[in-house]
Length: 326
Length: 311
Image 1 (tube, rainbow over the protein chains, first blue to last red):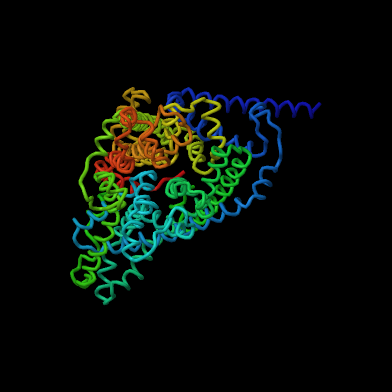
Image 2 (cartoon, each protein chain N blue to C red):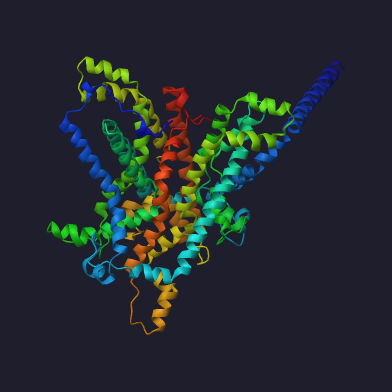
């Protein structure tokens, strides 16, 4: 009896608590109802564009056929993944994505940083600004346009390289879009060229933020420009360098689709050196029509990418809480 | 923050200057690199002003042997396709940018308010989309199977309307720049949330809205991926997608133009100058970006240094 009593007390307590909670929720909604209406369009878009597709990762574990529909298609466990890893593509696209992106991270650090330090030494402010403006131009061009610019130089029949540069050097014309060996150089050059203005501005903003007194003191002590760069500039902008690099490491599994899709003009001969996860997913899905294989590759990319973002953010947090993404 | 290069460079002490030779070296270096940024564009433009036969014989040249506007004449004779593509690009860019600005600001305002108990939840709701994505396949199926938007202009606008990154940037701006006291006093005066948002918050946030608008304009204008995925007919071909299609298949223009049809009808004595016309089209396609970008990049730089985004 006593047991029942205490049970009943707890029950009414729970009911009262949940009532209080429900009341709090209701009063919040009543007070801020306009906020929910304001957020409604954004919520719907995020649901459509991001959250519903997240549930769609289940497709990777199914054998989709259009007669049964997505929900009705049979489950196949890890078959799609097994199949993916049996192809030689799995290895090639992972290798290409990781190698290119690592290479890009290094180049996007070294060159823009060096350029920023040099441009900062230019005392003519008008000229410095002019150069900065011009160097930002490639960043504003779409990848389709970039592919035309590259094509202008590399076209087999009429390109500037084959029609003017190589003959002038006494060399045979090269079938650029059929020569695998040159693309591991061309793609990083294009990528660095396109991103230069963007990264340089970020590093320049950091350099300008350095207090001039450091350099004054160093000059009095007789430090050379090189010594100032090594001992003042680079250490003081280290936080920015770290953040920029870690942000890119977090996205190392996501290739720049445009760069790898547009610039090599989908030349099949080049696939061994230009196919990355993103282009593979696109092609197996929309060109070949293999939903299982492409969604398996896509899911792997999402999951590994997700853990990499967490990992790199964890490092950023340890270095500097302020700069962590979350 | 002022544009980066406006700032006085470091080492204003005359003693701490580079030796003249090194300073000259830097000048020469940057002149060369700046040229490297322009030259590829110049090549394309010069080809568009060349004579088709010269190009076929001698390849792409920086200085055309004969200055020739035939390519542009063909391009404008075939005004329909270009004009249509331009119109679609413009429409998508203007409508997309305006809609996305309103939707993102409307979302950012509630989550910027510290007194709103659900702000944290909704911030996470938008932030999580930056961390995890379902990938291309389910995303495509939502738009094509669920919404049936294949081959529509809506499919070129909808997917880019909301970006978590910009929502968080706008939210941070609201939080840091708009004094809570102003909102408080407006509320005491009896203004509703919607009125506060439109009459107080938005006018005070023009800098961040302008920056986001520029980024979005560029994103929409330069987008070809959505067309590649969703557009298969010849109806809604944006200017970027038109350039892509012509790159894939040089005869796309020749096959789809009234000018070429007229040539064929006349017995085909004149050939369609595909090489130069295609470069002319790219030149026309780049046009707006070239004119807008000195203005753009100024605000871009401000935007890049606008401050940390935190979840």
